[in-house]
Image (cartoon, protein in one colour):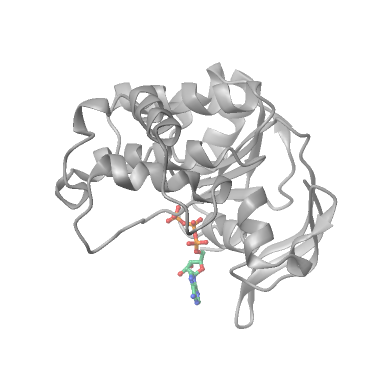
Length: 237
Ligand SMILES: Nc1ncnc2c1ncn2[C@@H]1O[C@H](COP(=O)(O)OP(=O)(O)OP(=O)(O)O)[C@@H](O)[C@H]1O
């Protein structure tokens, strides 16, 4: 993914200004920043939900020129708040992650369900397979959404605070899952306030609270530097 001179925000307030990034294929990028620093706004531009100035090239193509269907086939997105208001079994929701491999009109086959079961197993939620999704806890729902996303097998994933409602154990599991995706060559941009898990991970750090955010290799030193910025008040306050 190549981002050049990106400017994005709302009305007359730019939250991301003149951002340049070259994200290698298969990289993990942890996007950090104070509340309100623009992480979700940045992700909304990457996912085609918000107009932007400058350039965002995904797999060699400018994303504003891609159809919604094409963009969705290249990029899997986990929003900060995913909700549904109808009853559906967890396994049925997860198998829907296969629909791009399938076409809308054909029914899911045993192979699709086997993949859904494996994805649920990977996030530790196999025991909830038959439950009504709407009755799960917030953290359980988050893990089920991740299982669904993993079935998309998209080359790029954008995850908006995937660990926000998770306990210590499941946070680690989610970062392990993300590292498995990147080892398979999938690129993952992930916003998070969970600095504790970052030093052990391979990838890059992007701190939107810095005056000129840029990719830095993830190391204990770069995470410590980010922590110091984030423990101070945001520059715009
Ligand atoms: N639709 C909108 N119109 C105007 N301002 C908005 C809109 N959506 C968000 N904002 C503002 O833009 C700023 C950045 O919001 P954003 O959600 O991108 O922050 P964030 O870094 O993801 O924060 P958090 O860590 O709290 O999730 C906030 O001040 C927010 O109030």
